Length: 368
Image 1 (cartoon, one colour):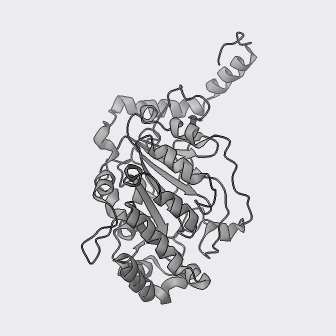
Image 2 (cartoon, one colour; image 1 turned 180 degrees about the horizontal axis):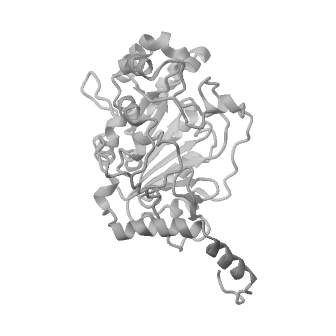
Image 3 (cartoon, one colour; image 1 turned 90 degrees about the horizontal axis):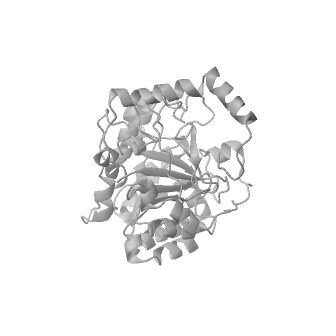
Protein backbone atom coordinates (compact mmCIF):
# COMPACT_ATOMS: atom_id res chain seq x y z
CA UNK A 1 0.00 0.00 0.00
CA UNK A 2 1.76 3.13 -1.21
CA UNK A 3 -0.72 5.81 -0.15
CA UNK A 4 -4.19 6.38 1.28
CA UNK A 5 -6.34 8.95 -0.53
CA UNK A 6 -9.56 9.89 1.27
CA UNK A 7 -12.01 11.36 -1.28
CA UNK A 8 -14.98 13.51 -0.29
CA UNK A 9 -17.95 14.21 -2.55
CA UNK A 10 -19.12 17.62 -1.30
CA UNK A 11 -22.91 17.51 -1.23
CA UNK A 12 -25.33 17.07 1.66
CA UNK A 13 -28.27 15.23 0.16
CA UNK A 14 -29.53 12.02 1.70
CA UNK A 15 -32.59 9.78 1.56
CA UNK A 16 -32.45 9.12 5.32
CA UNK A 17 -33.02 11.44 8.29
CA UNK A 18 -30.86 10.07 11.11
CA UNK A 19 -31.03 12.25 14.25
CA UNK A 20 -27.28 11.94 14.95
CA UNK A 21 -26.19 13.07 11.46
CA UNK A 22 -24.59 16.46 10.79
CA UNK A 23 -26.95 16.88 7.82
CA UNK A 24 -29.86 16.69 10.26
CA UNK A 25 -28.16 19.19 12.55
CA UNK A 26 -27.67 21.68 9.68
CA UNK A 27 -30.97 20.86 7.89
CA UNK A 28 -29.17 20.71 4.54
CA UNK A 29 -31.03 17.78 2.97
CA UNK A 30 -32.17 19.86 0.02
CA UNK A 31 -28.79 20.39 -1.61
CA UNK A 32 -28.61 19.46 -5.28
CA UNK A 33 -26.49 16.57 -6.45
CA UNK A 34 -22.99 17.62 -7.50
CA UNK A 35 -22.00 18.31 -11.09
CA UNK A 36 -18.76 16.52 -12.01
CA UNK A 37 -16.89 18.71 -14.52
CA UNK A 38 -14.32 15.97 -15.18
CA UNK A 39 -14.99 12.55 -16.69
CA UNK A 40 -14.56 9.34 -14.73
CA UNK A 41 -11.61 8.47 -16.96
CA UNK A 42 -9.91 11.79 -16.22
CA UNK A 43 -10.41 11.30 -12.47
CA UNK A 44 -9.04 7.77 -12.72
CA UNK A 45 -5.92 8.91 -14.60
CA UNK A 46 -5.36 11.71 -12.09
CA UNK A 47 -5.04 8.98 -9.46
CA UNK A 48 -2.84 6.67 -11.52
CA UNK A 49 -0.46 4.35 -9.71
CA UNK A 50 2.38 6.21 -11.41
CA UNK A 51 1.32 9.56 -9.93
CA UNK A 52 0.71 8.11 -6.47
CA UNK A 53 3.93 6.13 -6.51
CA UNK A 54 2.27 2.73 -6.45
CA UNK A 55 -0.93 0.82 -5.71
CA UNK A 56 -2.92 2.71 -3.09
CA UNK A 57 -6.07 2.60 -0.98
CA UNK A 58 -8.74 5.05 -2.17
CA UNK A 59 -11.82 5.85 -0.06
CA UNK A 60 -14.96 7.53 -1.47
CA UNK A 61 -17.47 9.15 0.87
CA UNK A 62 -20.14 11.75 0.25
CA UNK A 63 -21.11 14.32 2.82
CA UNK A 64 -24.58 12.96 1.99
CA UNK A 65 -25.36 9.50 0.60
CA UNK A 66 -22.35 8.62 -1.53
CA UNK A 67 -24.18 6.58 -4.16
CA UNK A 68 -26.93 9.07 -4.98
CA UNK A 69 -24.96 10.71 -7.84
CA UNK A 70 -25.14 8.35 -10.86
CA UNK A 71 -21.52 9.16 -11.80
CA UNK A 72 -20.01 7.53 -8.72
CA UNK A 73 -20.02 3.92 -9.97
CA UNK A 74 -18.18 4.97 -13.15
CA UNK A 75 -15.60 6.82 -11.06
CA UNK A 76 -15.15 3.78 -8.80
CA UNK A 77 -14.57 1.61 -11.87
CA UNK A 78 -12.10 4.10 -13.38
CA UNK A 79 -10.05 4.11 -10.16
CA UNK A 80 -10.16 0.32 -9.87
CA UNK A 81 -8.84 0.08 -13.43
CA UNK A 82 -5.71 1.88 -12.21
CA UNK A 83 -5.02 -1.15 -10.01
CA UNK A 84 -5.95 0.47 -6.69
CA UNK A 85 -8.09 -0.89 -3.85
CA UNK A 86 -11.28 1.14 -3.39
CA UNK A 87 -13.58 1.63 -0.38
CA UNK A 88 -17.05 3.17 -0.68
CA UNK A 89 -19.05 4.43 2.32
CA UNK A 90 -22.82 4.12 1.82
CA UNK A 91 -26.12 3.71 3.65
CA UNK A 92 -26.83 0.67 1.48
CA UNK A 93 -30.23 1.70 0.10
CA UNK A 94 -29.63 2.66 -3.55
CA UNK A 95 -30.23 -0.79 -5.07
CA UNK A 96 -29.53 0.22 -8.68
CA UNK A 97 -25.99 1.26 -7.76
CA UNK A 98 -25.31 -2.11 -6.15
CA UNK A 99 -26.55 -3.87 -9.28
CA UNK A 100 -24.03 -1.78 -11.23
CA UNK A 101 -21.21 -2.44 -8.77
CA UNK A 102 -21.93 -6.18 -8.69
CA UNK A 103 -21.61 -6.22 -12.50
CA UNK A 104 -18.00 -4.95 -12.45
CA UNK A 105 -15.24 -7.31 -13.67
CA UNK A 106 -14.17 -9.96 -11.17
CA UNK A 107 -10.68 -8.49 -10.74
CA UNK A 108 -12.18 -5.11 -9.84
CA UNK A 109 -14.63 -6.66 -7.39
CA UNK A 110 -11.73 -8.38 -5.67
CA UNK A 111 -10.33 -4.93 -4.87
CA UNK A 112 -13.66 -3.35 -3.88
CA UNK A 113 -14.75 -2.87 -0.27
CA UNK A 114 -18.16 -1.46 0.69
CA UNK A 115 -18.61 0.02 4.16
CA UNK A 116 -22.34 -0.26 4.85
CA UNK A 117 -23.52 2.27 7.45
CA UNK A 118 -26.28 0.49 9.36
CA UNK A 119 -28.86 3.14 10.27
CA UNK A 120 -31.12 0.65 12.02
CA UNK A 121 -33.92 2.93 13.26
CA UNK A 122 -34.33 4.77 9.96
CA UNK A 123 -34.27 1.54 7.96
CA UNK A 124 -36.82 -0.06 10.26
CA UNK A 125 -39.09 3.00 10.16
CA UNK A 126 -39.10 2.98 6.35
CA UNK A 127 -39.38 -0.79 6.01
CA UNK A 128 -35.98 -0.98 4.29
CA UNK A 129 -34.16 -3.55 6.43
CA UNK A 130 -34.59 -6.30 3.81
CA UNK A 131 -33.52 -3.84 1.11
CA UNK A 132 -30.35 -3.00 3.06
CA UNK A 133 -29.26 -6.57 3.75
CA UNK A 134 -30.19 -7.60 0.21
CA UNK A 135 -27.68 -5.08 -1.11
CA UNK A 136 -25.04 -6.32 1.33
CA UNK A 137 -25.54 -9.82 -0.03
CA UNK A 138 -25.28 -8.59 -3.64
CA UNK A 139 -21.76 -7.36 -2.95
CA UNK A 140 -20.83 -10.45 -0.97
CA UNK A 141 -22.06 -12.88 -3.63
CA UNK A 142 -20.36 -10.86 -6.39
CA UNK A 143 -16.97 -11.33 -4.69
CA UNK A 144 -16.52 -7.95 -3.00
CA UNK A 145 -15.64 -7.25 0.62
CA UNK A 146 -17.98 -5.51 3.04
CA UNK A 147 -18.42 -4.30 6.58
CA UNK A 148 -21.56 -3.32 8.47
CA UNK A 149 -21.15 -0.49 10.96
CA UNK A 150 -23.61 1.07 13.39
CA UNK A 151 -23.43 4.68 14.57
CA UNK A 152 -24.34 4.53 18.27
CA UNK A 153 -26.99 6.94 19.46
CA UNK A 154 -28.90 7.22 22.70
CA UNK A 155 -32.14 6.56 20.79
CA UNK A 156 -30.71 3.23 19.64
CA UNK A 157 -29.93 1.82 23.10
CA UNK A 158 -33.31 0.02 23.64
CA UNK A 159 -32.85 -1.71 20.26
CA UNK A 160 -29.32 -3.07 20.72
CA UNK A 161 -30.36 -6.71 21.17
CA UNK A 162 -32.62 -6.59 18.11
CA UNK A 163 -29.88 -5.07 15.93
CA UNK A 164 -27.28 -7.61 17.08
CA UNK A 165 -29.63 -10.54 16.47
CA UNK A 166 -30.57 -9.24 13.02
CA UNK A 167 -26.94 -8.84 11.97
CA UNK A 168 -26.06 -12.33 13.19
CA UNK A 169 -28.94 -13.73 11.17
CA UNK A 170 -28.28 -11.76 7.97
CA UNK A 171 -24.48 -11.31 7.81
CA UNK A 172 -23.21 -13.93 10.25
CA UNK A 173 -21.85 -11.64 13.00
CA UNK A 174 -22.76 -8.50 14.97
CA UNK A 175 -22.13 -5.20 13.23
CA UNK A 176 -19.17 -3.05 14.15
CA UNK A 177 -19.75 0.14 16.16
CA UNK A 178 -18.16 3.53 15.62
CA UNK A 179 -18.16 6.57 17.96
CA UNK A 180 -20.62 9.38 17.22
CA UNK A 181 -19.22 12.89 17.52
CA UNK A 182 -20.98 16.17 18.19
CA UNK A 183 -20.24 18.40 15.18
CA UNK A 184 -21.60 21.44 17.04
CA UNK A 185 -18.89 21.07 19.70
CA UNK A 186 -15.54 22.82 19.06
CA UNK A 187 -13.82 19.85 20.68
CA UNK A 188 -15.82 17.29 18.65
CA UNK A 189 -16.91 15.46 21.78
CA UNK A 190 -18.86 12.19 21.94
CA UNK A 191 -22.51 12.69 20.98
CA UNK A 192 -24.35 11.26 23.99
CA UNK A 193 -26.02 12.18 27.26
CA UNK A 194 -24.08 9.41 28.99
CA UNK A 195 -20.69 9.63 30.68
CA UNK A 196 -17.73 8.17 28.75
CA UNK A 197 -17.66 5.20 31.13
CA UNK A 198 -21.38 4.52 30.64
CA UNK A 199 -21.05 4.97 26.86
CA UNK A 200 -18.18 2.51 26.73
CA UNK A 201 -20.07 -0.07 28.80
CA UNK A 202 -23.27 0.22 26.73
CA UNK A 203 -21.67 -0.16 23.30
CA UNK A 204 -18.95 -2.64 24.26
CA UNK A 205 -21.63 -5.31 24.04
CA UNK A 206 -20.93 -5.52 20.30
CA UNK A 207 -17.34 -6.64 20.97
CA UNK A 208 -16.20 -4.41 18.10
CA UNK A 209 -12.47 -3.85 17.57
CA UNK A 210 -13.41 -0.65 15.76
CA UNK A 211 -15.24 0.73 18.80
CA UNK A 212 -12.55 -0.49 21.18
CA UNK A 213 -9.74 1.27 19.31
CA UNK A 214 -11.65 4.50 18.68
CA UNK A 215 -12.52 4.82 22.36
CA UNK A 216 -8.89 4.20 23.33
CA UNK A 217 -7.72 7.35 21.49
CA UNK A 218 -10.88 9.47 21.12
CA UNK A 219 -10.40 13.00 22.44
CA UNK A 220 -6.58 12.78 22.59
CA UNK A 221 -4.78 15.68 20.91
CA UNK A 222 -2.14 14.31 18.53
CA UNK A 223 1.25 16.01 18.73
CA UNK A 224 3.37 13.22 17.31
CA UNK A 225 4.85 13.44 13.81
CA UNK A 226 2.06 12.54 11.39
CA UNK A 227 2.76 11.59 7.76
CA UNK A 228 -0.67 12.73 6.51
CA UNK A 229 -0.01 14.82 3.44
CA UNK A 230 2.98 12.69 2.47
CA UNK A 231 1.69 9.13 2.77
CA UNK A 232 -1.94 10.21 2.42
CA UNK A 233 -4.13 13.00 1.07
CA UNK A 234 -7.67 14.38 1.28
CA UNK A 235 -9.21 14.90 -2.16
CA UNK A 236 -12.30 16.84 -3.25
CA UNK A 237 -13.50 14.35 -5.86
CA UNK A 238 -15.47 17.00 -7.76
CA UNK A 239 -12.90 19.79 -8.04
CA UNK A 240 -9.63 17.83 -7.79
CA UNK A 241 -8.30 19.95 -4.92
CA UNK A 242 -5.97 17.85 -2.77
CA UNK A 243 -5.20 18.77 0.84
CA UNK A 244 -2.86 17.26 3.41
CA UNK A 245 -5.79 16.26 5.64
CA UNK A 246 -9.25 17.49 6.64
CA UNK A 247 -8.32 20.91 8.01
CA UNK A 248 -4.80 21.27 6.66
CA UNK A 249 -3.39 23.33 3.82
CA UNK A 250 -4.02 22.58 0.13
CA UNK A 251 -1.35 20.71 -1.82
CA UNK A 252 -2.51 21.29 -5.40
CA UNK A 253 -5.27 20.61 -7.90
CA UNK A 254 -4.45 17.19 -9.30
CA UNK A 255 -6.99 17.37 -12.16
CA UNK A 256 -5.55 20.49 -13.80
CA UNK A 257 -2.40 18.96 -15.29
CA UNK A 258 -2.08 15.17 -15.31
CA UNK A 259 1.59 15.41 -16.29
CA UNK A 260 2.47 17.42 -13.21
CA UNK A 261 3.81 15.38 -10.26
CA UNK A 262 1.88 15.63 -7.00
CA UNK A 263 3.78 17.57 -4.32
CA UNK A 264 3.16 15.46 -1.24
CA UNK A 265 4.30 17.04 2.06
CA UNK A 266 3.56 15.93 5.66
CA UNK A 267 1.58 17.65 8.38
CA UNK A 268 4.20 16.65 10.94
CA UNK A 269 3.40 17.46 14.59
CA UNK A 270 1.02 20.33 13.71
CA UNK A 271 -2.40 18.69 13.33
CA UNK A 272 -5.03 21.42 13.59
CA UNK A 273 -7.86 19.11 14.69
CA UNK A 274 -8.76 18.85 18.39
CA UNK A 275 -8.26 15.09 18.02
CA UNK A 276 -7.97 12.47 15.28
CA UNK A 277 -11.62 11.45 15.26
CA UNK A 278 -11.03 9.04 12.36
CA UNK A 279 -7.98 7.47 13.98
CA UNK A 280 -9.47 4.04 13.26
CA UNK A 281 -8.39 4.69 9.66
CA UNK A 282 -5.44 7.09 9.77
CA UNK A 283 -3.61 5.69 12.76
CA UNK A 284 -4.26 2.01 12.04
CA UNK A 285 -2.93 2.54 8.51
CA UNK A 286 0.26 3.80 10.15
CA UNK A 287 0.27 7.57 9.56
CA UNK A 288 1.58 8.08 13.11
CA UNK A 289 4.18 5.28 13.19
CA UNK A 290 5.46 6.20 16.65
CA UNK A 291 2.18 4.82 18.09
CA UNK A 292 1.67 1.05 17.70
CA UNK A 293 -1.84 0.17 16.52
CA UNK A 294 -3.74 -2.88 15.32
CA UNK A 295 -4.10 -3.16 11.52
CA UNK A 296 -6.95 -1.45 9.71
CA UNK A 297 -8.26 -4.86 8.60
CA UNK A 298 -9.30 -5.56 12.21
CA UNK A 299 -11.42 -2.40 12.23
CA UNK A 300 -13.54 -3.81 9.39
CA UNK A 301 -13.46 -7.60 9.38
CA UNK A 302 -15.64 -10.10 11.22
CA UNK A 303 -15.36 -13.88 11.38
CA UNK A 304 -18.85 -15.33 10.96
CA UNK A 305 -20.36 -18.26 12.79
CA UNK A 306 -19.79 -20.48 9.73
CA UNK A 307 -16.10 -19.50 9.55
CA UNK A 308 -16.47 -17.14 6.58
CA UNK A 309 -15.22 -13.55 6.83
CA UNK A 310 -16.49 -10.14 5.73
CA UNK A 311 -13.19 -9.34 4.00
CA UNK A 312 -11.94 -11.53 1.18
CA UNK A 313 -8.41 -12.92 1.73
CA UNK A 314 -7.04 -10.50 -0.86
CA UNK A 315 -8.63 -7.46 0.74
CA UNK A 316 -7.78 -8.63 4.26
CA UNK A 317 -4.13 -8.95 3.31
CA UNK A 318 -4.01 -5.49 1.72
CA UNK A 319 -5.82 -3.76 4.59
CA UNK A 320 -3.45 -5.49 7.00
CA UNK A 321 -0.52 -3.51 5.63
CA UNK A 322 0.90 -0.29 7.08
CA UNK A 323 1.78 2.73 4.97
CA UNK A 324 5.21 2.73 6.57
CA UNK A 325 5.92 -0.68 5.04
CA UNK A 326 6.61 1.02 1.69
CA UNK A 327 8.09 4.25 3.05
CA UNK A 328 10.85 5.23 5.41
CA UNK A 329 10.39 7.58 8.31
CA UNK A 330 12.07 10.99 8.09
CA UNK A 331 15.14 11.81 10.10
CA UNK A 332 15.49 14.83 12.38
CA UNK A 333 16.95 17.08 9.67
CA UNK A 334 14.18 16.21 7.21
CA UNK A 335 11.53 16.90 9.83
CA UNK A 336 12.92 20.42 10.20
CA UNK A 337 11.62 21.07 6.67
CA UNK A 338 8.12 20.97 8.14
CA UNK A 339 9.06 23.61 10.72
CA UNK A 340 10.69 25.80 8.04
CA UNK A 341 7.68 25.49 5.75
CA UNK A 342 5.36 26.39 8.61
CA UNK A 343 7.49 29.42 9.50
CA UNK A 344 7.60 30.49 5.85
CA UNK A 345 3.81 30.21 5.49
CA UNK A 346 3.28 32.57 8.42
CA UNK A 347 6.14 34.98 7.76
CA UNK A 348 6.11 38.60 6.64
CA UNK A 349 8.93 37.77 4.23
CA UNK A 350 6.69 35.36 2.34
CA UNK A 351 3.99 37.98 1.98
CA UNK A 352 6.51 40.55 0.71
CA UNK A 353 7.95 38.10 -1.83
CA UNK A 354 4.48 37.23 -3.08
CA UNK A 355 3.53 40.88 -3.39
CA UNK A 356 6.72 41.62 -5.31
CA UNK A 357 6.23 38.62 -7.61
CA UNK A 358 2.72 39.80 -8.43
CA UNK A 359 4.14 43.10 -9.71
CA UNK A 360 6.66 41.45 -12.07
CA UNK A 361 5.25 40.86 -15.58
CA UNK A 362 5.53 37.24 -16.65
CA UNK A 363 7.19 36.32 -19.94
CA UNK A 364 4.67 35.58 -22.66
CA UNK A 365 3.66 31.93 -22.68
CA UNK A 366 5.69 31.08 -19.60
CA UNK A 367 3.97 29.16 -16.87
CA UNK A 368 4.12 30.73 -13.39
